[in-house]
Amino acid sequence: MKYFFITAVLLAALGSCSERKNPFIIELIDSPAGESSAEPYLFTDPFGSIHLTWIERVDTINYLKLSHWQHEQWSAPVTITSGYDWFVNWADYPLCVGDGNGKYMAHVLKKSGPGTFAYDVAVSHSVDGATWSDPAVLHDDGKQAEHGFVSFVPYGEHVFVSWLDGRNTVGDEPTNDDDHGHHGEMTVRAAVLSYDGNKLNEWELDNRVCDCCQTTSAITKKGPVVIYRDRSETEVRDMSIVRFVNNAWTEPKAIFNDNWEISGCPVNGPRCEAMDNTLALAWFTMANDKASVNVIFSDDGGETFNQPIQLNQSEEAIGRVDLVLLNSETAVVSWMEGTGIQVAQVTKRGSIERISVLAESSQSRSSGFPQLTKGDGLIMAAWTDAEAKTVRIAKLK
Figure 1 (cartoon, rainbow, N blue to C red):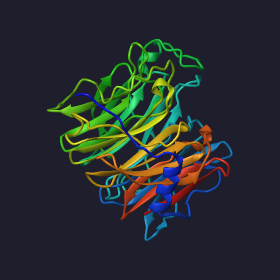
Figure 2: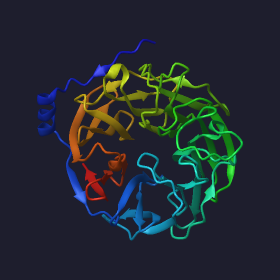
Figure 3: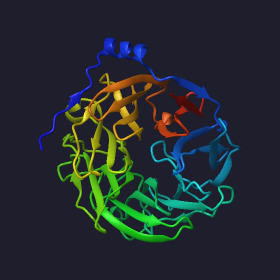
C-alpha cells in the first residue's frame, strides 16, 4: 500500500485562529504531589477511575507515590516504595496499573551495579492499594545491564508488560561502563504477570531495537500489540509493531517508513491506545531533518494502518508524545513544541478539531514527558514544572 501524509495545514496565523475558535477548556487543579516532585504518570483502570503516580525526593531518598481521583479531588498520597539506589531518569519513569478492584502493580528502576547504565526493572504489587510488596526484579537474566522503558496494560485478570532489555549488550562479567558501549544489541521483551507478581509467560519480541525509547502496548480485540522504535542495520529508527495472533507473535513490521537515519537514540518513544480493533498511535520523527509529530489509526488491530496525520505547527517540535482514544474515530494527542505543551483532538479522517497550548514548559530534560489519560467524563493531563520542581495537573474539556 502506498502512503501519503495528511499534513495539518495550520500555519501560525491559522493555528492561533483555530485556538481562538475552538480551544480546549483547560482547568489547573491542585496536585497531590509535594515539593521536589517529578516524573508523573497518569493511568485509568478498567472501570474508568483515574490514578496518578510520581516521584518525590527527600534528601537522598526517592519515594514513589500514588493518589486516586475521587469526588473531584485527589486522595491522600500513599507511598508505594522508596529507595536510595534507584536509577531516576527524566524519560524512563515509573509506571503503575490497576484492575479497578483494588489490585495494583508498579515498577521502579533499581541499580544493579556500579555502571551508570546497570539497573533492573523492580516490580511491586498490592491487593488494596495501601500495602505493597517489596520490589522484585522483573527479568531473570542476572546481567548488570540496562532494563527499562516499561509499558503496563491490564490484560484480563492479569497485566501485560513490555520493556527494553539489555542483557545482550554486556558480557558475562560485571561492568563499570558509564556509556552505551554495547557488546550486542538492545532487545524488546514482553511478559504476562499475575497481580501477585508471578510471571505467567515471557517472550523476546525483537533482538535489535533502539536503545532508550519508550515502548508502548495495547490490548486489541485480537490480542496484545507492542510498538517501539526499531533499529535497522543502516541505523534507520522508525516505528515497528508486533502482534500476538493465534498464540504466537508476528514478525516485526514497520508501521510507516519515515526513514529516520540517526546514529544514536533520540529518546523519543511512541504511545498507543486501543478500543476493540481500533488502534491509534502517536510518534515523533526527524527524518530529513524535519520535525514531525504524527498520529496514525488502524481499524484491524494493527494489521494495517491508515494515512499518517502530522500535528505539529512548527519545526520547533521535539516530540515527547502521549495519546488517548476518545472513541473509535477520535484521539487526543499531546506533545512538546518550542517551550509549550501542545494538545490536539484529531479524527482518523485527518480533521484537527481542537488544538491548544496546554502549558508553558521547557525543552530541558527535567521537564520530562507530559502525560494524558481519560476517565470519569474528562481528560486529565500532568507534567513536571521544571522551574518550580513540582508536578502540575489540569483537566481538559
